[in-house]
Image 1 (cartoon, helix red, strand yellow):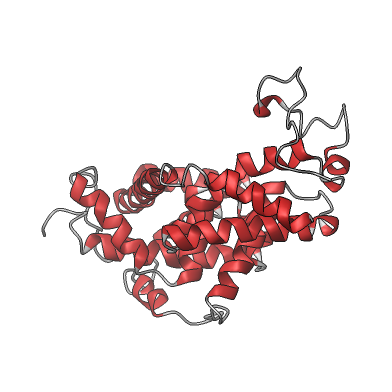
Image 2: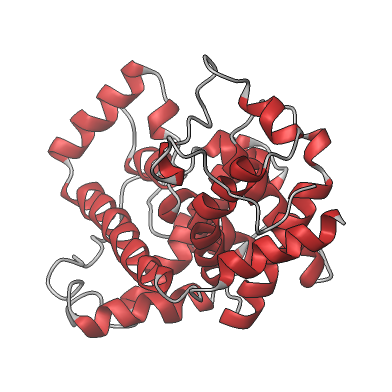
Length: 79
Length: 215
């Protein structure tokens, strides 16, 4: 039986995706029974959602002519 | 010689996005890249400029600095193209260059902290058997409010640079731990530790900024 600390660490390091099937199933089982680890998981998920939303808001801030300027610089650097 | 005035796309291709850059069956994309074919370079700039700009900003650089960094990344990319062996994706290679540029700009390479106080904070939340001593407050109720969304920007600002970079690459760019390991030149395990520490710091910070209901 995995402890809360082991489950939380595995989720938080992002190592769960590469963990063996048996370990992934153990985590899933643990989460079904443990509200505290489920809350921690919810924190991790929401932080990801918020960070992506925050960062994608920046995407439109890239100057419209940055691509063209970059291409001009590349052309100069090849001369 | 390539010039900006050179027609960049064959007439049969309606948009740059249709270029079979990764279609090994037609022409070896690596060979096209090595020949510095204008259409290929243009496509790479087009596909990666916004993403790199966003990442540079995500790592804490201003718009002007991010603008400079993006251009520098592509210039270095062109200069070092002959060393690109095609084992990783072009975007991973570009993020690797960005990482080095960022390190140069920060002048000193971020320290490899073997010890981090946030580890003790995490430890202190569990008893000897590894069970949570007290439940964490639930983030559900307020996390979607506009105020709470602004809090993440503040909290990201407060992360150590390397934590912030790893968090961005893993969580926003959604790159694998193996890709991030290649980009920043650390082991996959170390990437996991940095990601873990970044998330713990963020959670503590957000908890203090109203992401959880008052206790």
